[in-house]
Length: 125
Image (tube, rainbow, N blue to C red):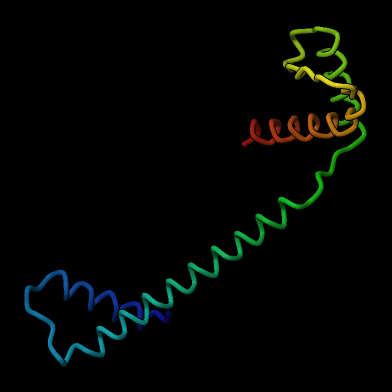
């Protein structure tokens, strides 16, 4: 919206709020201008929300960029937790059945490294 239109809308709103005089037919153009400004603002807001939603969906589908060092650090923490080291800060879930938790080791290590990376990002902010 141009500065001139913004000033006109602001002046019209000030007029409405400051005066008890009812609006008449001569104010129709000003009312339409305010409605148009509101519609434009709603459209901009809707577009921004859509862009944010798309960006969030896109970033949520991206694979994390984990270095070998991150995965090795996670492996060390996992090994400490598996050995019963309470200072590792992890609780490993019990698994029942024929499968072994070691079958899922790579996925576990990647998840752990990703969580540590997120924790580090949160501590920095």
